Image (cartoon, rainbow, N blue to C red; front, side, top):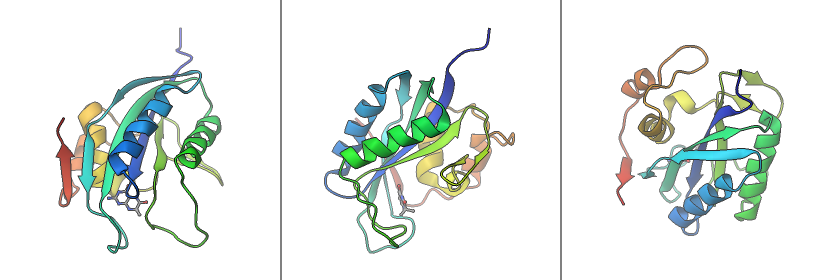
Length: 166
Ligand code: ROI
């Protein structure tokens, strides 16, 4: 019988306040979501900012969930957790610093393109701070288009990325 649960991968990022604490707290909040189980979270990674360089370095991680929430329900839960961590969306400020950013990277094998949500996440295939933690927890994973995470990783420069041990 088909599972009621869908595998979802969430990218976490923070570069304001205490970024490691924000990311760890967000992982706890993911684990507490209704109709959802946290299977595993990656190590934390320190990463140089992509985009404007006049902002602090980021802490990034990826979490693997199993969820019975629909994609948009899950997205709204992620936005609620961001807001609870002090995330303020500044009009017109794209790619600026943030206390917490939660991206729905993958939702099963679904390809979703609607106004609110694009899955797989647009930056997934070129961001070392997403690909490396994703590979850490799901080395065999394929994207909906059949590309393997390990292939994307091999094509992606790893400069500026450092795994935090312990
Ligand atoms: N850069 C890094 N290293 N990590 C992020 O999570 C991140 N998030 C962003 C932008 C501003 C694109 N840069 C980032 O949204």
